View 1: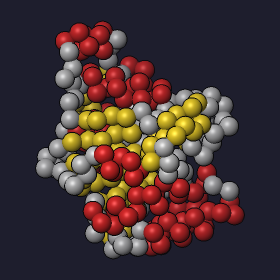
View 2: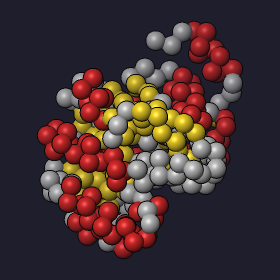
View 3: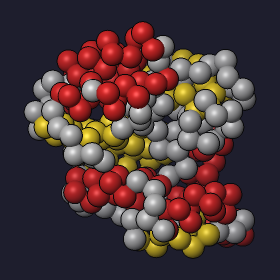
Length: 254
C-alpha cells in the first residue's frame, strides 16, 4: 500500500489534471503536451475502445511495453489486476509517478523487458531520447543507449498466476518479432485476446515481408484478426502493405 509520506512526496512534484478515454486522472507534469493530446481525445481512441471492450473487473491484463502508463492507468480501473512491463528507466519513472498520483494499487509494474532470455541487454530510442516511447531492443547502439534487465517469458509465466488473463497488449517497437515466439505456447493454451502493435519498418527492408508472414503463421490459431484503425480483417491485415510500411495495431481474438 502507498504510505501517506509517499503520496505526499509524489503529489508535491505537481501534476496535470487530464483525462484518458474520458476518465479523469492526475498525470505527471513532465509529459503535459502528451496528456493534453489524450485529454482532447487525439491519442489512439481505438486503443481505449479495445480496453473498454476486452476488460472487466473479473479478468486480468498484461501490458508489455507500458511506457509512461496511459493504457495501464485506464486498464487499472477496468481490470481486476494489471501486470505492466516497461524497461526504459525514464518511462518507468513516469509510470511509477502516475500510479502513485492516482493511488492505484491493482497494478504490478516491472522495470524489465520481456524477452527470450533472462539477462542484461542494451536498448535505445530510435528518436534518440530516453523515455520517448520509441526505445527498442532492436536499437542497442543508438544514442542514449541503456542497459536493461530482460526477463524470459517462461520465468514470468512460471512465477505468476496467469490463469485469469483476458487481454495481453504488446507494443515493443519491433522486438515483437523475437519475443512473440516465446509467448505463443501460452497464448495458444490460455487464448487471451491479443492487442499487438507491429513495427516492420524497424527491420531491414529485405526481411520485413518474411517476418510478417512468420508472425501470421505463429498466430494462425486466432480466427479473428482486425486492424483496429482501418477495420481490415484476416491474415492480409497482418501481412499487407500497411503492416509493411506503418505501425498498425491489431486485435486478435478467439
